[in-house]
Image (cartoon, rainbow, N blue to C red; front, side, top):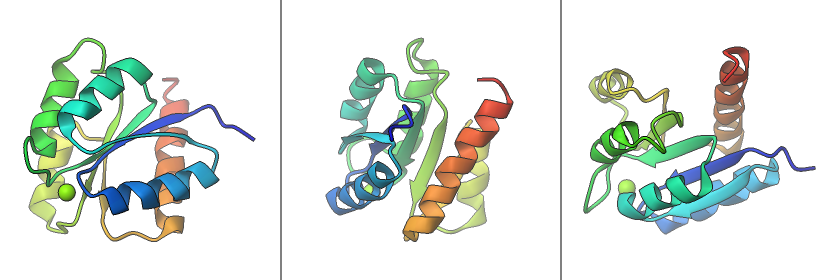
Length: 130
Ligand SMILES: [Mg+2]
């Protein structure tokens, strides 16, 4: 069964991308991945995903910069973005929420945890009628 929701994951760690892809494809989400923010932005414009999972720590352009770019581009500004990171500190979480990220998922996560976070995000957006 397909649930017709597209998710784009942007992360420079290919192992993380593979893992997330396996977990969410299993739940019938349609997955797209990118290993750089620049590639991710192009993919977001092409595929119009319903959700973007965005890594903060990336070598060329970090997740915060990419978040800003996504929010200023006409084509992508309405797509909800959840930040992915290894950092567990509260300060980062606050920055993320201030910058307009809708959630903050800390790595490492269990498959169950990731699925329930993603499902919750979609439930919230469906309630809002988005
Ligand atoms: Mg990274």
